[in-house]
Length: 242
Image 1 (cartoon, helix red, strand yellow):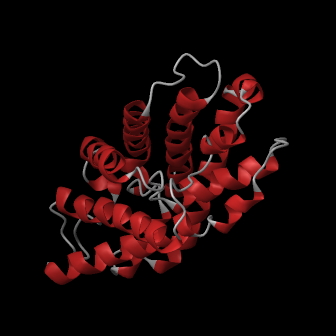
Image 2: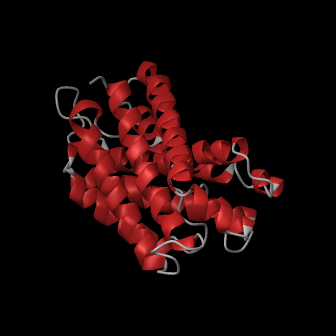
């Protein structure tokens, strides 16, 4: 197991289980149809738990470009390692999204609402407002990164454990993601992870859906850029305060 493979598999499990719970709740005819937001946020928290448990010992379980870039901005992760980690995360997210489609293919076919099918792949705002949607994603990711840093009681020196999701154990991370979903997720669906949103969005547009909404691409930059901004601010503030 290499860090690249760990990030790939961890992110694949993250998206398979996270987007899987959305599919289970939203698609027609599933056993979990209509079970609601609490089920979705809980499923995503447990998806994070699974991904961190798998990848943590080998890569630190970033599973999120906002985490990787935030650490690099803070000088605690080599910039030379950023691109391989990002490639692994996006590839893992795309693979996980494809597996969700494969798993729920009959239910995607049975679902008439194009928006519900798309929601099982990527996020969209409840109310479209570019600036507020951007702020929502940035704040959600800021909370994630800033809380993670303090969960670790992290040490920033070169000889000490680098900050990353895998450095703290999976349960606290799952709880903070659950809290973000419950408290802050209602505006945009809390992507808080560029790979988790853009990777499945690409897969959705490659799959044989006939009712794709091309307008969704106009929003797609927000769950990519805003989490990176929010995560970088969290890293910089933590360094300033500590």
